[in-house]
Length: 438
Image (cartoon, rainbow, N blue to C red; front, side, top):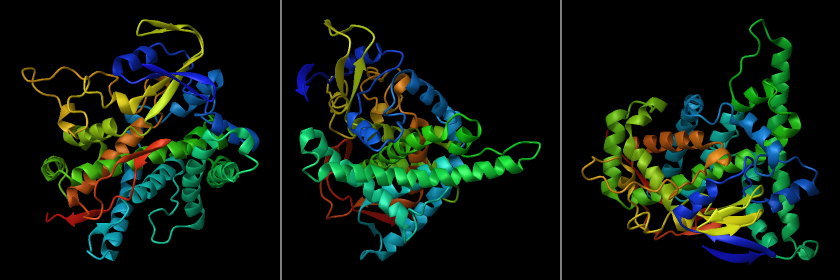
């Protein structure tokens, strides 16, 4: 535990599992991560509504309660299995097209970028039952602009965060940051407007059985759980969260599997033992794939999508490690450091999925600390889409392991994590996908 000062604010930094637990278990009824000032600045400047990451207090609680419907439970996530498998089908088709276009006939030059396209296609299909063309050879212009704008917004947010506010009219970064968000909102508004028209048409022609409800946003709008303005504020933030989690985690997963042929062979054996190559893996099959789930858990331990976040305890004093802190103290939770703490995880820098597997009582190691790795957060402010993200990653990884051996391309070399609000690879990840002889 140590203190630091940023923008005249005193921060208390925590980098061990026991200290993270002490703070998270003392959360208020309406936990505050941090003030999300930069995101709010865009919403206020452009008169845009807040979403689940920017709203606080009772208003946040009501919004989050509505969004939890059809999303938070494992049984809710299972409803999206067929939709995800449809997107995975197209991902495999596009994967083979890209492989065929390479010099070696089996290589994909930038897996993180490719997984980003997959994740955006998947989340849009889940939210709207609409395909946005991310996996087509020629991607629609609106979708391309959205993808570029997300990167643009993140890149310029770094400069805007650390430069004084008086520089905003003088330097280009603030306008670029706003423009990035504007395009993101424009993309979301177009999808929402189409969904509103669809819902209105169905309500006008509904028979005695009412409207048939299917997709997530359709469910929320038809049942009156979200107003149009709440939906506009919510959608861009859901898209951002739904894409970064899965795309980066899948890239890191394949990076490590490509460097460990023995582990990859064991994973292939497990997957085809449950779902032979001719069978499309289903939600119920994943319960019989403990190694596959452990591989993803180990990836998230080494590379938590958000390496740090924070909590502000607003309603009471809080005691941490014997020290008493006043109300409104901001605690920075250093997940990246905590999940690589050797006192919690032996040999923490190595990729060892087997540390997550249950063993016999005789040789079982000391239980993992429950707050040693919490990549999806904790409590009522934990990740809304956790179950869907887990299902999405597990289904895709299972399909890839069924049909391909993944090998690191020689030009890739060592890849390290780079913090850009979220944790990303510091360079392109090129992989070879060798077709398995089934």
